[in-house]
Image 1 (cartoon, rainbow over the protein chains, first blue to last red):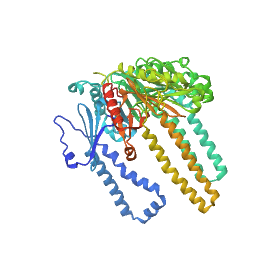
Image 2: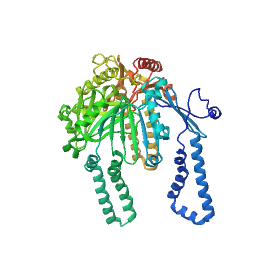
Image 3: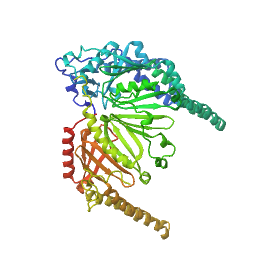
Image 4: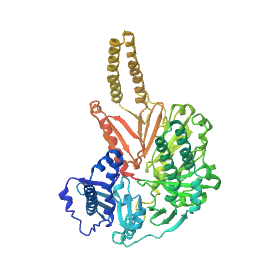
Length: 452
Length: 174
């Protein structure tokens, strides 16, 4: 339900035999997996060396070449053994209703991931894995963790497994699920590298960080004349500027959004490749972000929230009409309300939030609750009525004096969308109306098993 | 200013004598207030005495007057707890549960029954002594803060059973 059921720890003998039910095909991960795990002991040693550089140097100078060689050998053998054993003891199997992952040498752990609770499937390929030709596959279910991913699988296996998992989750008959194959994809959007680069240059964050990285260390140098403080402040800022510009370009390069019967397909990446599949009806909220400098081009960025999934970008940059057509594919029957359809808070709201209250807006249509905030960087959050988990109205003493209140709508992706500073009577109506719409909206929603 | 708290389940308005809870709504049992006030006194009165004695011994009798501060705090808290207790109320409507609370910072929560993932009844040792149990509702959204801090155990169990029953009948999930 809320978490994949886990059993682990005790009952070693019992689990060790692993009496696989007849017909259940248990599989191992790709044989290169141990290489990944072999890094762990080396990483620990390097971490220790960084933690205490002086002590490390002293100890290194005391060692002879022979003991050093032996030590390195021991680490490598130990790492290889650890990697091999953890690979050997990791099995996974697809049953009719769940994906089962058994891991652990001493502390056994079995994750049962229910396929009908599937929120998204991520297939990611870091650069090194691309060279070897293997990929990682992760099922997003509310409560799955990093360790519930299948790393690594060969590319062919991963594609077949994804198709099979999606077919089973969609509700195809178990016998045919393995043979359904990949659903055909219809391309909705491809972001051109030029547009992505321009859009990133027009984003404020990297520039602010870059300027800060130049100004702050200079000032510090003038004050302290200490090289270390300068390096310690400049490096994180430069890193941040790099990550928010070049890093984002690399991650969002070649962004493709496609539509298939299995749901939304998102593929992207220059060095690390990522392919995400979000089945129909899993999107909890969609946000249309409009930074100040993008406005004259009419560009927007679209973010989405899926319960249990870490990815949050749907479209890194696109002209508004294109983005809106993608949104209408993601949330069927939803039209993004135009700026003039949003109702502003009453002008007395200026007493609660000066200036910024201009940015607040709200529109409730048949299909969505849409709230906007932000003045320079406008964000319009859309929540389909069917995804509303609970509705709250909050009002502080000053807000009560001014006769305004905030309406908060909670969704399953742990995102709360707030319509700020509505007039008190409107807020009360919204509270009751929204609860009503949430119930009725759900009746028209598609079933969890979208092909059933 | 009202945030709609006055609008009862079927539009019924106006307080009904007694505790000042509008009709159709259920307030918290008196025990919650007694327990909270007792806790307040148990912590603050000894603190006042200790402060008074220590100041009187080490800094002079005039300074001992500062012991009145915790006492004033206790008196203020006594009133505040009363107001806060009166502000808590909930009502079970046909399709959702409505919880309203807060005096200065009002908050009103609506949770459709179908969205409930889990209903939790908790009761600590002190609450058990006062014959109380808290009910907390969980939906798929962690931000849903739907709890009723203290109820008579029989009422808590009735509410739990009713909520789970209604939740099952209207189950909607994520």
